[in-house]
Amino acid sequence: MIDEKKLKEIENLVPKLLSEGFIKKNKEYQRLVDFYKEKALDSLNSANLLLQASVNSKVSEQLGFKNFKGYLWTINASYYSMFYICNALLASEGIKITAEVGVHKILFKTFIYYFYLNGKITKRFVEELLEAQEDSKELLVMEDVLLQADKKILNLIQDLQNEREKRKTFTYELTKDRIEVKAKTSFERAKNFISEISKIIRG
Image (cartoon, rainbow, N blue to C red):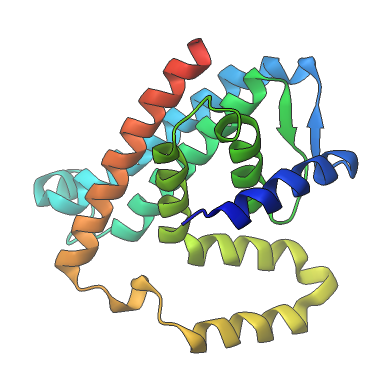
């Protein structure tokens, strides 16, 4: 998880990212709070719909899908709902992530810097966001690969291949029952996370 060494690194890194323009501060960004909250809710609703269609054959058949299993995308949509509510929280303080690559890692570090290190949120929020990122790791890695493709395509493909060889991701390892449980956990975690972070935004 997050140890003192990593916290110290974050404490030193975020001001540097701010000075380099990967993170920006401007009260104008406060107008984005509702936009990010809406995207968080849309993502959470998407996760719920995917989950309901996956666990309930009547729902999936009503939607025109037989034997639908959207557990992986339930997990990813759940993570994105947390990602967007964190953006809303940052925006409420006039903070915006402007980096195009590595945005999820930068958001996590910025979230810790501005809200955990000063005691505005508890360690539980940090751990929940970290767990959600870990569950969606394969998707996030692919996003970064696509964004950097025009510059480093060969190196990135090789790096991705090496990473896949080093570890098997849960996508291939989990049995149907285990991935269903994981999807349900992801959705519940995201729902609670959004509820609690929304209270902080309302302040």
